[in-house]
View (cartoon, rainbow, N blue to C red):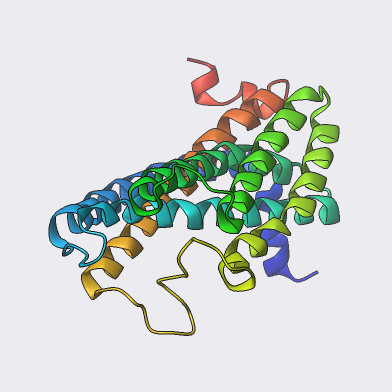
Length: 249
C-alpha cells in the first residue's frame, strides 16, 4: 500500500475525521450562503421571463438543482456503502447516516416544487409519470434507510443493513435520469446535458448552475456538521472524545 493511500485512509478514523470536519463545514456553509444569494438574485430578478411558461417557470431554479442533489446524494451514499463493506470502515456508515436526511429533504423539495410547477402546466398536482414515480420511490428509499438504521440498536449492524439498502436502491437513480428517454412521459426532457448545448437562455443556465452549487455546498456543510454529532454519539466512551476541549467545558 502506497504512502499516499495510507495518508488518505487515516481520515477513515472518526478521531481523525472529526476535527477535519469541524474546520471544513463552516467554509462550505459560507460558500453555500454566498452561492444561494447570487443564484436567487439571478434566478428571480435577472433571468428573463419564459415566453411559454411565463413567470411560473422560475420554480425550476429550485426544482432542478434539488432533483439533481437528491440523486447525487444517494449515489454518494452508495459509494460510502461500498467503501464500508469493502474496507470495513466505521466512518462510512456514519457518513451515509449523515447524508440520508439531506437527500430525503431534497427529494421532498423536488416532488413538492414539481407539484407546484405541474398544477398550472399540466392542470394536476400529481400524475403517475415515470419521472415523478421513480423520484417518489427515491424518497421512500431515503425514508426506508433512515427508519431501518434507526430501528437497529447495534450501530455496526445498522450500518451494514443500511449499506445494503443503499447499494440495492441506487439502481433507481439511472431510472429517474433516463425515464424521460425510455418512456413517453409528461415530464419535459433535460434542459442541461453533457452531450448537447443547453436549450435555455444563458442567464437562466447560470442561475440554475449557481443554485446547484449552493445546494451542493449546503449538502457538504450539513453532512459534515451532522457527522460530527454522530461521531460524538457513537464514540462517547472513547478517550479521545473525553479529551476534546468542548467536552471539558
